[in-house]
Image (cartoon, rainbow, N blue to C red; front, side, top):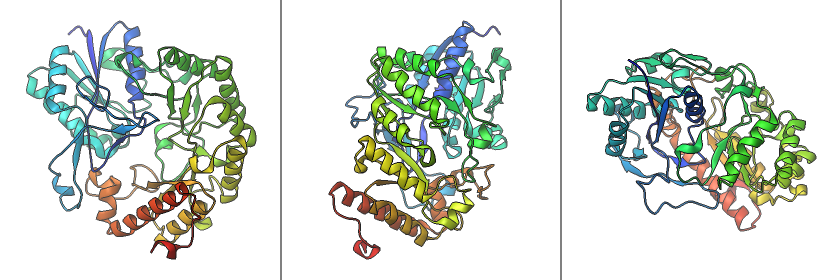
Length: 435
């Protein structure tokens, strides 16, 4: 068969909760440009694209984020006892089916990020089978990289893992050097409220809860001028919000500062967000000033915990003192503390509720907001946990499975109360104030 038409699919999400927190299938967008250079006809179905023409009255916040279209669906048997609604988020099944039929692809490439989102991968295969067509079905992304045997059981023709540099069926090479990656191909979207971008792959740290070391052996950077060119191209297309997917954006410091002032020299007056978190240890005074000048908003810092015993188990990626210094540097650069967010982890193995509460109150006391990152056990990491089905690694299901759902609900409620007090400029008190 002579392959001419390649369809890329970002499937719908099956979950207890999902929100467009600057989500884009960046891997597929890189692949799109690689495929186009080989003269393939390429189309994209992004089931989680909220500005898709199918939808009407789409609402977003000032940062371009918003709710996905969703419908409640029946829970799989393993989740049946979870006392929450299970939903399907994204384009309706019949819309996806018609678009696949209209394009009539020779090859379909499907991605999947979270390991517990695999029901969307199954749905895509079911839709294609229902059409009676026989395109080659390929699956890639984080899910098949971390759970290859489970992914193979779904029945795609072949799975590809992150790090595989050759796709046989398409005769294309994925560059090993990130400098050789093309820009992400955003031409598939008619309207964009933001674009996701990354300046690097990988991270020099080896946090035991994180899968990044399993996905990338080392940190690989793009040349700063290349990243600025990518942003400038999109900026001239009218995109003025950008979210960075880097795991270690501030490392090394001189590279990040060069990047910030390079944007300014190009006259790019955009807004930048850091949903993956910034390393407090590397947020110096110079970095904070460069961030403010470049247009970074709502800076998000990674702290994880203020518990020194737990910090030791997490290899001391940062200390509470380094975090306090980073907050001071941001405040001195002009950021309001109430617009600074801090990621705290909750639900780690051997982390008791008292440790989580102390961290929440420690951080709230200094006047910055908390983003509670609920631990979910990721396969192939040192903190992997044995569960009967990957669906149970979903944080909502995991805490119910472990009998910790009431404890988690309490710390989530406490976080909301603390953040509300910060919004109202009311001092954060002792735990007794919230009981």
